[in-house]
Amino acid sequence: AIEMYKLAEKEENTNAQAIALTMKALYLSNMTDLFGDMPFKEAFKGIDENIMQPKFDDQKVIYDSLLMDLERANTLYTKTSTIDAKRDLLYNGDVTKWRKFTNSLYLRLLMRVSNRRDMNSAERIKTVFENPSQYPIFESNDDNATFYYDEVNPFVNYFGNILESAFTTTGRRPAEQIIGMMDAPGDPRISIWFKQASGYDGWKGAESGKEAQESDNSGVSLLNKANLGDYASPYSHMKYDEVLFIFAEAIKRGWIDGGDALAEQYYNDAVRASIRFWSDVNKTGNPVSESTVERFLANIPYDGTLESILDQKYVALFWTGFEAWHEYRRTGYPALVIGEGTQNDHVLPTRMAYPTIAIKTNPDNYAAEVARLQSVFRGADDMKTPVWWSAEAVRKGIE
Image 1 (cartoon, helix red, strand yellow):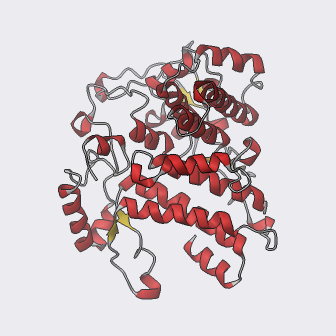
Image 2: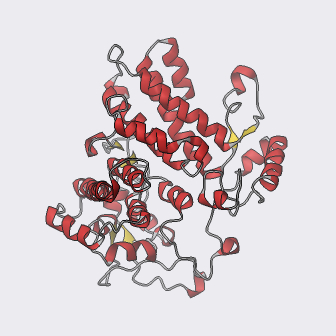
Image 3: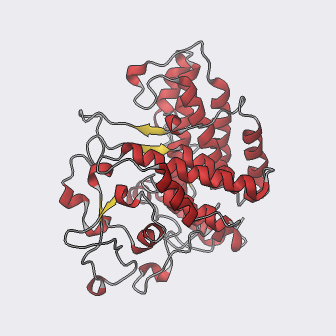
């Protein structure tokens, strides 16, 4: 994305510049969400300025910059420059959809840092909601940032070359919690994402946090490779339902006027949008009927709580990168089960430890970051130290 921006700037193609800034924000936000502080300002200056050991930047600094990039990108889109449809595998040169993705991603990042009042997320999300012409966002599943692969190498799903036996190994079985959240209320997505084990009638999730020798994996459901890991199985960076859930939460929190009635409308529409997307790409069953969707909604009604919104958002974020985990750390929902055999001192992972290559190639700056983790976050480079935007960091008074 960095090199794409430089090339687009040289060619004075503002649309390509905007897309480059959007992709930069997408990938770097995910990286900082995984690790916390990381090299950022100096991270891409190895060739131009011979900086081979970049300093780590605070996560707030990174988010301030990425949000600014997305705000700028929104202003760069224009109809006077074009994008080559053959080179655009996401939107086939549709600049309007790219702009919607930019602003929808902007909403995601604003909600991510909403625990930090000085980021002004509430005001900025309200501005987007009230100014659709200035900030166009996803309006339907047609706008989703989804790759629809064509089964021709190299444009194929990452899991396409993996045999089904490997794709459905124990490490990729659905957990009992997600199965429980979907099976009991009759979620129609369960048979799209998963399939019942051969010889077993019903859905069963793998026990979480159990010692291997104590786990009973007989009859545990499998991932549905035909829908998730085939050569042409689609993959989404972000979908319409996430935008609707963001607004439902913002309304419930009082950032946007409308109260519970409007929050319920966005909640219901978000669930509908998620089910409709998966129904449309389902290869292993009949389309989900509207009556089935409405029966399911009747079983998971919005009850006026944030928990109801965030629990269903967690489910809908299945197969969208690390987003469900990010949201859990931001909100504490859903109330995930911690099994008796859970390692990490019985703490659900709060971040990822820095990769070995970063430690070996950038030892001095890594040491400085470890000292910051100890002094500011009162932790170490492990999976127990919270990231800056998380609910846990705020609860501990970490600034």
